[in-house]
Image (cartoon, rainbow, N blue to C red; front, side, top):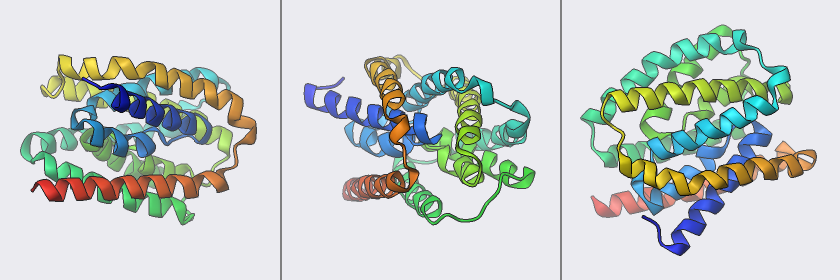
Length: 241
């Protein structure tokens, strides 16, 4: 499954992404997925969705005092058709399409979140965010940026809590749909299990780093890592066409 160097790289990527998501509300897939797909394309979407589900559960417990299901209900309802369309696309389109689309969508998403677009979490915005989050999350395992955009002007504590609950329920929905559509297998489980300790390590690391968390410093770092990794994915995919 993994040789030593690739396993260490995967563990570091998941740890960094898990720590970032635990502090900022999202980031696991944005940071880790571009690296994991280079290690083994089978790590997307099921394994990283499963890792995100575990992390979201930990953060729901951590931020349980600030959880309000009412605010994300519309986003979760809108995620259902987006996830269903994502499953259909997985059965119809070649893997190269998702690699290219994944890279371009992440680069665009990073650009949008980095530019501080003034978007509030109104019901309409939450509905659109939920739909595209389901579509992107199911096909590429990166569903965070659309819903994070809707929360970018919210209080950090509220954003952390409600995004954690959204990702917990949303990733479970995507995993169930992928299972029903026959897009899961035992090999993906074998890929996932060695990376679970990295999720716990990243969560624990966030407890230590949270008091130093300054979002203005982390966003440029996310942009650089994500865009650089996506450029590598595009190069690798195009080279293999």
